[in-house]
Length: 609
Image 1: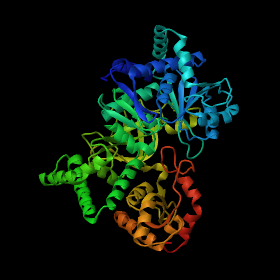
Image 2 (image 1 turned 90 degrees about the horizontal axis):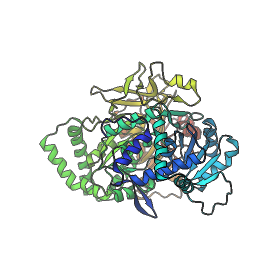
Image 3 (image 1 turned 90 degrees about the vertical axis):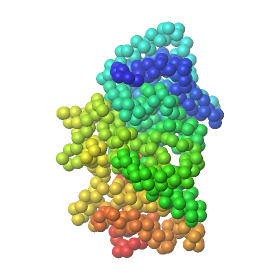
Image 4 (image 1 turned 30 degrees about the horizontal axis):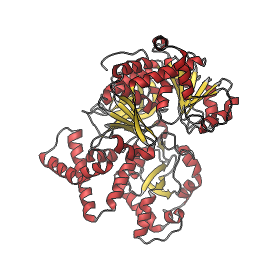
């Protein structure tokens, strides 16, 4: 990609498409159960046709256009077409409710919205009369069986046809290129609404300069290449995956779309990616599945596995983190790899892969485990307001427990109270229609106040210790980082997720969502009879085993940090029920409110219940 500077994102995408035109496949996605490819030439022609289709409908520069869709190739085409005519995309999660859509599209005065399917269309049509600015509705799916006769509703393919037949090929090229060349770096590219866990969501205004600077710096740091195959499963409407997709694209990497989070294992085997972005939750699930599989094997195999993992972690700490290792340890690791790790990789269907983990802190033990079995995991850190990437682990400078050094065009400093401040061309213009919130977030010197707490290590890497708002103070005046404790307890094979409670309390307690597969195995071994999950989690023997495991894991924590009591839950956290955000992070205030009675009981009881 060199040091080419692009004025805007469509210019970057067009340049890449021209470079690889008919030489290779840009995207792979499933059609009728089989992966098929789309060349760069086909991709650009569709972007051009859709752009002209939007112009034919009367869309113009700076119009806000919503995108409500799961990841699919049409998403990318729509996003780029909106941008190519100088309009502004407003991508939102497909699980957003009709009421939330009403708020967002009224807030940004959206003129049109592009949805993926009939369900999403019906949802927006429910509230369209409450959104005066909204005039156009485009559905990516065909109209099969849809009986709505509203002339404002058109299909994706219809817009493509309108655009394609509106001008001759030479005129189409000229019209779109001329419009792209008009887009200035300071023009708005997108408004991305934050999840709004503490009230109405805020629209983060990102310019072309914000996005392009972040895309180019991220691509360079992650070290994408033409031979890379990038498998994408995180939502494109979220700033993290949105920027990384364009970063991969900018380097000519092939991008494959996972069908869903449930099919990741299958898609990895089919695509054999060299690189994936992920959130820690997926890595935790994979590790627990491997451990569960090993626990079914005999005692000897289990012992060999445990030995191999310990050898692997020691080797990784010495060789990867410190750059040196003894010949003795290296030989032990080669043996562990031959006996154990190579077989695990074979079962997972891929020998080498690079993960970039972000969105939440990654437990060091989980990270070491993946490096040990032969999969490289690099951590990144960012936030929507920073387009979003701030820092990423460098391949030649891995320091576990950190999120690497800032991108080359991003400055980071730590405020007196420990808050991480960020400055650079990636920092948002501000919040849409909210000057006060913008002034609070960005000071007069251009520093963005992230709300995260961290420190810079001796090696110059950034270490995140917590969210500023998540650090609580117990009744004894001690500052406590709940995430640190949760990461420790989550290592238990019996724990799926846990939430630490302790703000203004005498001691810490935990709400624990157990790993029910492991509990059922325990019940079988201990010959415990139960008719439902409530009986299982209230069994004294089960509770005692979990307590002993948690106590074992907490031995290195300070006394005031340790969890003294816990309650086992029977219902999984979900996005639909509101406990999880769309990027799968727990909404603490929702969980605490839902289980307030259970929490109070833990503080009333003198002994573990």
